[in-house]
Figure 1 (cartoon, rainbow, N blue to C red):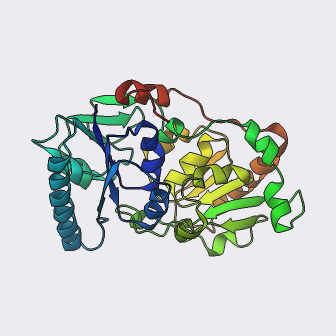
Figure 2 (cartoon, rainbow, N blue to C red):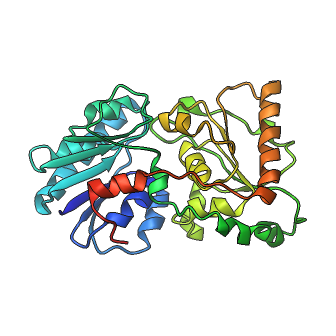
Length: 321
């Protein structure tokens, strides 16, 4: 079943890559991390398309350009289905050309994309809290379909980061990635926490989106997070990837997602949703997160396990890689 896979975000690449066949085609957004991931080498035909961002008029113009380019691409390289996560223009371009147009999303706030997508199949998690109606569902969250849930890897990695950067073995080292806010729905969700985390009794190792272009970390980012005692971020994607692997994670973001509600009962997941970071409740939460990192060193990590991968395999076919 020849497929066009739409890659709009690094996590989409992580998810979809396992199903790529040699005769499939890829539509890949122009963004720095995806450039780095493409350097890994792919045999499939690839179309690069502009990232839809900027003012409303800029988004309209870029969206129309993207749709036109994709339609021509699909005419030249016909497929049976298009599978897109959160990117609607490829599905609109495929209408009348492609029999199956799959739309996946786990981001309820991206209502503009939901309305624009001309899908024949809509795939949502069981935890979905939006108004979009599903034709198919999966039980959990998407990182469970592409991340290895191997808690024993943490046992062999404990203390590795501390040794590499010259810290005492009992110091806590946290993987920190700050959300820049260039995404289509990021800006209203960002909490400025820079001042509030400076006095935390942990050592932060910063990871920036731009680093992926030079250090080759784009594919390894979700696994890198497991080398640390914990993760602090404003990114819901990274937070979910870390929590799935059992990493004590503090997400500071006003984001509301069904999959975050799904993760809320995990004892190693902490989510602060407010602007006020000098509230005593925030201090209480961060202290609890730090205590969890310390206790996890002795008790071990507990990955989050469910049947998401099996559900996607039934829909997309068995993975190639």
